[in-house]
Length: 397
Ligand SMILES: [Zn+2]
Image (cartoon, rainbow, N blue to C red):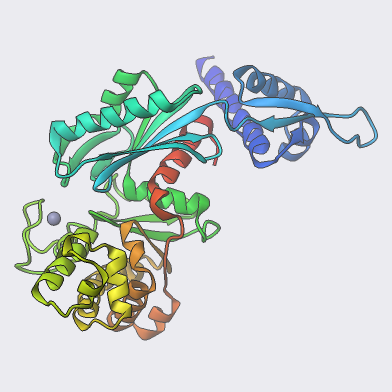
């Protein structure tokens, strides 16, 4: 009996998701249309719609056109009845947003992190969420966090985050206890991949590789429209693969990790040094102080024909190109999206990467590999984590 009962519950949950998704995907629809398109009985649809009306996720918006019989009552998803708190801990500042159920950002807050880590960084996370909760003037459906590091996506524990120096931190449990709300924690590059798969320029492609490059570097793989986790949660951790023997010391303790030769932090540091050492560097024509150099400054200096800066980009592309070539050739996924802060480099990096790929793979294969900058911008992790929350809490894709 117990088995049958659980099965009925599962069926009901599945049917509820179907009905909600159908209402979510249409600007308006009716119970009859839902029954027709989902194959569910009218009684089942009516019953589930009543539940959604009571919960305030759906509203009735008057009568629609008749197809011969009685005019149907039209239904609409309510975008602003609940909200999500979505947080991105992956860059040099912690970012958070209050997001509606359509994924639109209603309020945004950032907190300067600097070199804070450990307990201090955790306090900043609480402070950020406190502020966002204060800003939210509608009930909160859940909290989502995109964090760097090795994360168990089921328990939401940060097993190890190098740059924040978090080890075995039960982040989801701590946040859930503090705010008494559903909490989901995912790796920030997986959140970025989720955003690409949901809102990106190639969201309709079944297979994608998304490489997020900012303070850290990680890849995420989408196969048949779903995140690929391999043998565990640590898929795509290419940032701490050693690519340069006896290279610079990485915060993880090794030397020459990919992050030490291709992260945005590395590029900025090198560009600042070039500007300081060479007064005639084009970088010095673009900024008054080397400390003001951004990745966009680096892009402009490349376009102005600065040899040293172009060499720097070629060096970065060589290491990144090798990492991408290994991924692409190993699993035969040909659409690669680059996301994160490094997108500011635009075509300057893409052209160089494409060239490096032709140097490191069979020419025939290199032609088939498409590398593009993500168009989703700086809020990609917030968008992805919001999409993840919608999926986990409401079953909406
Ligand atoms: Zn490392």
